[in-house]
Image 1 (cartoon, rainbow, N blue to C red):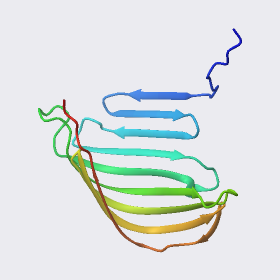
Image 2 (cartoon, helix red, strand yellow):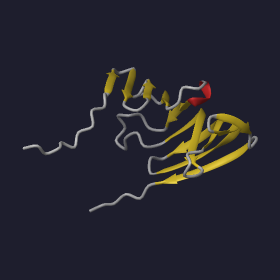
Image 3 (tube, helix red, strand yellow):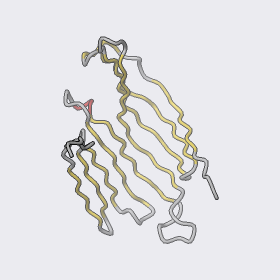
Image 4 (cartoon, helix red, strand yellow):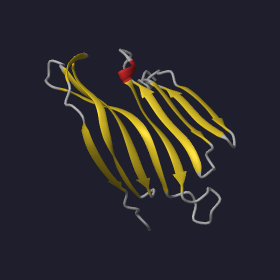
Length: 158
């Protein structure tokens, strides 16, 4: 009938492994995303979540790597809802400064501890490396320091 279809032909690559000792997921739509868990049903486990949006250097690898101690095993009657962990994080935030397209980016690397109760998460740590980038060029560093993050969810029950 000559009508345009609202289709955007983007390639999507998705791959996963699910065993009793290793669970992983790899997806590639706009950039590669890799997540995996070693010993997913055990009290002590390791999780990683990584992605890379730019390909300038290793600082563009954004991710979180955590060694967990879960308070209840997966088959407990309460389920796997609480744990404590220690990890390493590389994070990035960016935005356009003006209409002419200047891009500002802040990258930081940190070590942290986390207390996770699924609906409430408390995370604190130390930023040991940080950098400002303006249009991809390093222009300075905000320095080192401590951080605290509080996250919560409100469940809606019918």
